[in-house]
Amino acid sequence: MSSPRTATISRKTGETDIRLSLNIDGKGKAVLETGLGFFDHMLSSLAKHARFDLEIRCQGDLEIDEHHCLEDVGIVFGCALAEAVGDKAGISRFGHALVPLDEALSRVVVDFSGRAFLNFRAKFRRSKVGEMSTEMVEEFWRAVASKAGINIHMEVLYGKNTHHQVESLFKAAARALHDATRLVPGVEGVPSTKGVL
Picture 1 (tube, helix red, strand yellow):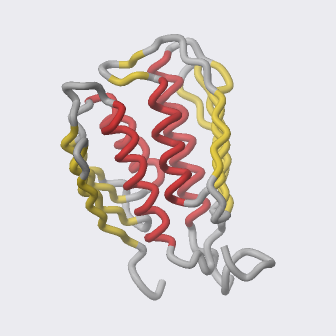
Picture 2 (cartoon, one colour):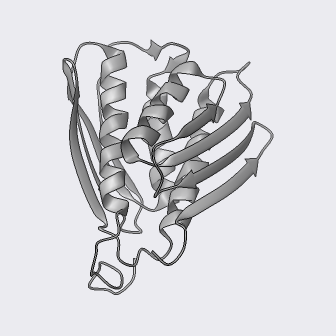
């Protein structure tokens, strides 16, 4: 590995103030302060199972609702992913995972194609988990896909407990992102017949 695959990004708007640090060759350490307990729990699972070191500090207009915080963290995380993988030379590019959590099962497939696309299929049984709206799960990942330039297909295949459904989805995303960002020994250049991603 010629250089650290890391990124540190700050973003301040009239709605949120975010600082994020990412190391995609980390050990799964997370330091999270978003003001949203369940979101921190999901981001902690994401870091742990992707083996990314992730630090996020977000101050936002939670007195309104959680929308801006989740979407803007997704934007910054997506930008950090794009910066950390750089020109994508030598990466696996593709990743996929099936992850259960008790009765729930989720599948995520990702391609670091340079073309942003999200296909999201999930029917959650509750509208909220803790203080986080389940409709924001899709919005978070849409922002990540858009800024990271990744094609990501996400499905909750089944489940009854909404906490389990959302968590299995984040864990599946973590495993898929880990696999897609790995450097493949002996492989040189960008994994594309175009020569660029």
